Amino acid sequence: MILHRFCSKEEFEAYQRGEVLVNETNHSLHRGNASTSIGFCFFVEDPDEAIHVLSGIVDLDYCITVEVGEEDVMQSRGRYGNRQLNAVEIRQEYCTTNYDNKRFRLVDATTKFSTYAPNHRDLKKMFPFLFV
View (tube, helix red, strand yellow):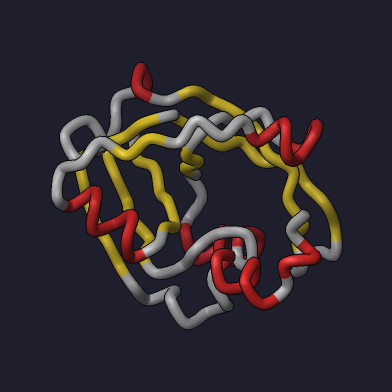
């Protein structure tokens, strides 16, 4: 299956080096019923569309497109604000607690979204009171 992920420059470089990236964050503990994801989140939508609901909550240095077997990800869901529709919606996503460039084979990587909005990590530094 083909999936996409927005990520930081540091994460992408570690992925390219062949490191196994690990993230065991249970997003339901931080976002309540807003998410069933654990670890890294990937999406199936066209990145040109997904950027509108993910900007501000992800790092946008790179958008990677990977090919991965369905056995290596878990289907999950997340609640996102859609500024274009001025609404909240539930979106299907896929998650994994670890990934690498062997199981998640790189199809494409782009930096074209990197100037679209501030990165999540930068927003946390600028407005820490919003991320309690």
